[in-house]
Length: 276
Image (cartoon, rainbow, N blue to C red; front, side, top):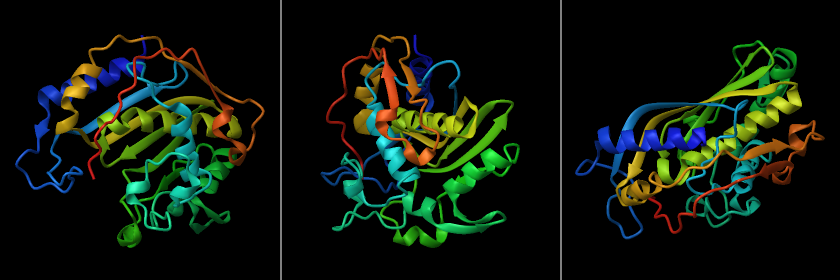
């Protein structure tokens, strides 16, 4: 059975059984009908995925792996902050009339800084260090730029990546300040698992561990019954996910270079209410 499924089920059950309910507290999120969106939350959830053993996609329901990869590449490769550059409509609620989400996500990764090796953006600095100084302990990105927060359509949830090489393995830590477990958990895990795989391939490593650190892991009140049904479903073996071996430049990858095989999964969960 899929390790990602087992981890997800245990995490959700722990949140439901031992989490803190924000009902009656002062909360910012609300539903489309204007009512407050309360959560059951856990602080400081840490999940580890060994990418050398299996790909961490849920089988309880289908994760749209290629759509998730497209969004990741929109941020990390295109360094875009305009939703018109995306096929999915996930970000539309936070965009202005021109499609911009402001100085958020991809915009931050595209800003150039003066590094010791020259002027480049954060993504290019990661690639440079992985190729030239792989045992550096400073291979990281951070898009939570306080000076630009007021000009962001939304403040970044997944805000920092730290990369670490051990032998021939590329490992990474994804830091996330907040996560809607039903809507976004496996979506983000899949995205950053593929990112690690892509960077490993173009920089000469094998994929290692992805460590996912979530400061506020929460299940919204209107998601509780959906989660309870989801975690009771049958579990299947993890799918096989590989990359096109002919791609040697990170900027040449497309979602079509992600090859998904033997993905057996339960029915999709449709019409998930999203808090704003």
